Amino acid sequence: QVQLVESGGGLVQAGGSLRLSCAASGRTFSNYAMGWFRQAPGKEREFVASISWSGDNARYVDSVKGRFTISRDNAKNTVHLQMNSLKPEDTAVYYCAARDKGRSTYAYWGQGTQVTVSS
Image (cartoon, rainbow, N blue to C red; front, side, top):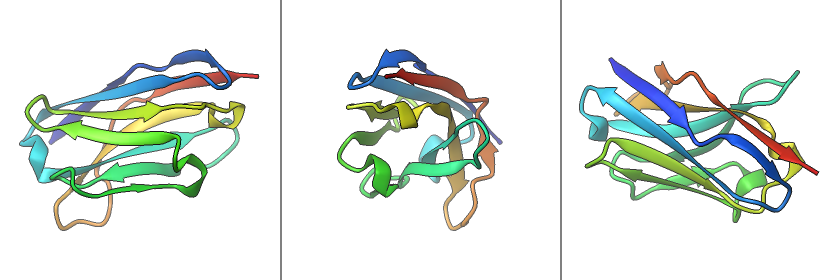
């Protein structure tokens, strides 16, 4: 199993920046692709970004392209989400998740960190 703990959320004004971190423990971190998801009040959880186990490939939902950057440090067992030019619609609980190599679903999830963007 992999345990995931997010940090870095908070309250920020529109146009500001936050950097989320996710610390992983348990099995070998580099065996997992990592993703960030978010869930706003009254809405379903949505995919935000993902990064391959090697860090070579990243994907983003269209609404954050050019503003968010996902990265990972396999030596430190961490994944980050740098969020710039934040908008009120980015307000949500952000979750870190891990997906085994060769699997299509994310099996491991953190508890989430709240991001609130004020207008």
